[in-house]
Picture 1 (cartoon, helix red, strand yellow):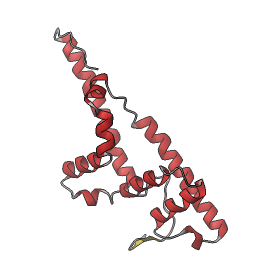
Picture 2: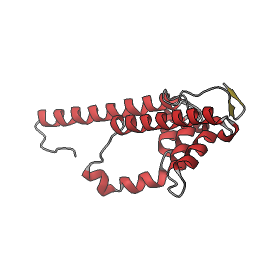
Picture 3: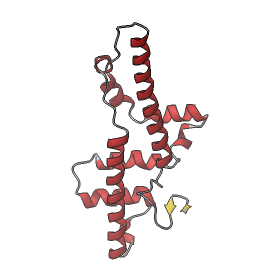
Length: 163
């Protein structure tokens, strides 16, 4: 339960109970390679719970930070497996990597907000597991559509193969 910016209780990080905004912030936190893993976990705790984990008794803090680390590690594995997309040669030539670097998560936020008629700020408050489900579905649909289009092109005598 959230009271303002403070989360009271224990978040099910492994279950994806954190928000998409939390997910983006945590990615930025862990991109900082100048800090120790403990410092990064403390910052992740503050992002998720809204207060310093140093306020918790040592055993509770250890358990909480371990749960955060394990939950985030699980989500990283799931994302790597389920959201894996290798750009085509044409997409690479068109500059998709540069585009990704420049727009980052904004493209996803905007696409989901538009799809559901929501304000982008509201999308950031949605559970990450919900956003992940939409991202996974959209990727699977795009991969299916590409395969289907390739089959139909070959079937109809076209020799142009999409990369």
